[in-house]
Image 1 (cartoon, rainbow, N blue to C red):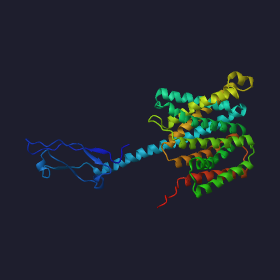
Image 2: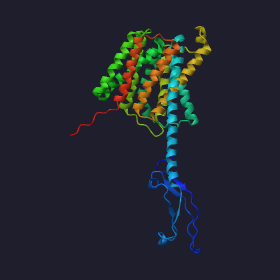
Image 3: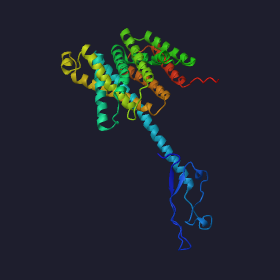
Image 4: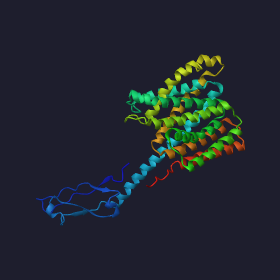
Length: 390
């Protein structure tokens, strides 16, 4: 895609000199800027100058029509085409983000219903993400990062809270309906504001605080009428909110310095690999390694089905987070936050339809109020208070 300052050649023929001993220069390719003066005077005939400087302004200056108007129109068309391509690409990424998230929640829930070992499931998902990250580094799909030991130490706290956040999410999904877990996770903005105020000293505006009221009220209303409600699932989802927002606060607090090769995708990949090693000893000393063909068969489960669904869930888990980081690199945080809110709506509706989750009218109203509060919060966050004039 050419920029507005790009130039395009103007087809022009050679000029014939009246004096053979002093031939004119052959016509050079004339370049027209889409944003230049030529564009403001369509159809202007442009002259090619001879090699003789003392006669530049005289009859040797021949004008050659080069269709400036046509060129001026063609360049914006290229711009529009590039813009359209970018829009289609961004739309495709949003579609993949939602699709991978839907499949992750469906397959993950199916596995957790028959295999109630969330630590094993979470470790499998980090294992799949680790293999995917190593594959992309080895093949060169993603540039291999250059990272120091000091950086790894700085990233370690992020990996720990990332591990805990995903583990608590899986624990909640194993106990309550997918729709209810995501309704509770709509309270993430509340914990973001609270933790940012405590640890970063970032006080919210009055309007941001007001936007939190429908979020809290909606979640409370949905919880009171949730058919699958139990305290273990509720507090696990709440703990997931706290840990994920702690990760965001830590990333600001620690200010991890990144080298050129350590972009967002590489940072996420490193966190995934570290999370796999962080959770490995926890898995061994708590649940033990349960997701094996021998254990699944002894439990009377369909081995191929459980392993296949676990693998698909793991791939979708890593894919949707990778795509999320790709989108964040292309749009503003506010746009990403709005997209995340819409994604939560899509996941809730899809899971209700797929699992045929019983939902009462009051429960639906509570969920809708909470999600509307999240949307309002994302819009108000971009309104920053004006600096005080001395």
